[in-house]
Image (cartoon, rainbow, N blue to C red; front, side, top):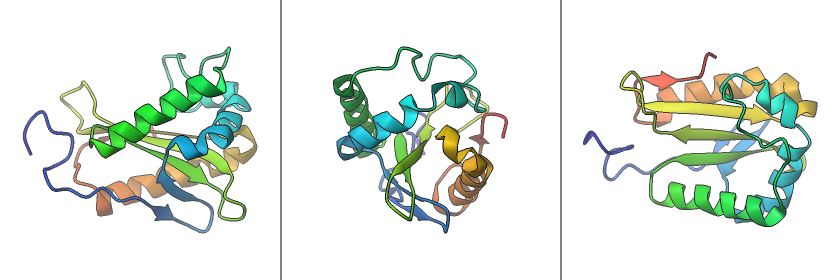
Length: 152
């Protein structure tokens, strides 16, 4: 893989991870309202989740639905261009957004990818299960060997 490539040429990224507790699909504009409601209901919880040490996200003052939509469009464009991969975490029971997973390049030469995830405060019991399921998925279905799990 070229040094500046995030994934190998021709790599087809997985678009789903399904467990009994949640399912992942690429995050996109269609998730705007539910995504916005999920993270705005859990700002302090997300900020205390491993992987969010800088305290910049989510913004304490929130953002408008239009600003959130622009953010989701950016994530969808990154996915389409293989520059980063963001997944919404959905409840298998009702399809509601309960969290997010981000797979992005890292500036560190020690890692191939940084993975961050969060769940809503009312779904905090799923945090470790989500992080562990994603870790197994990265080993089985993704091309990276050195994964920064942000202290998990």
